[in-house]
Length: 222
Image (tube, rainbow, N blue to C red; front, side):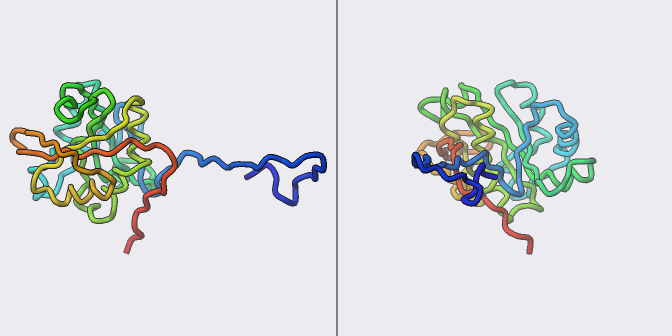
């Protein structure tokens, strides 16, 4: 609430009061939040119990690896920061609730040797990798919202304050993934990356934007 409404303001005949400018506060995306897993809290402990049970859709297995494999690798490397995509409308009180609330996973990777192959200035970039949304929550705008400013950008700023760009790699043929990333503001850089068994990937990027943005909305349930 503002300090004074027109009815509450005391008249001042000696000078004209300076106009008050309302500064937008921190934005929180309704419906989703990103929970860092490199923390020790009861909530994180429950999420870590559930994530190994995630399975991606069969047609996406050649494009992304599930958390049961990528989370342990991230835990061994301080430059890889795993997080869970969590719905806000389900309190994380027990394992059953967490199974309903945890709808995706991703890793923010700060490793310079990896970034040097993808961007001109690896010191000012982070790599979004191992990102997925569980099959039962796809087609609902979750992937777009989780990759859009300000939600992802605030997480990146907390992990890597110096970062000005978010990059990711999309395997050729991953049309659904490319649509999601483009809708979240990522555009191709023109670079291509040889990912070995995963084939050739196209590099996408967008700026880190932590300022005021229209908040991405999840569609209403049908």
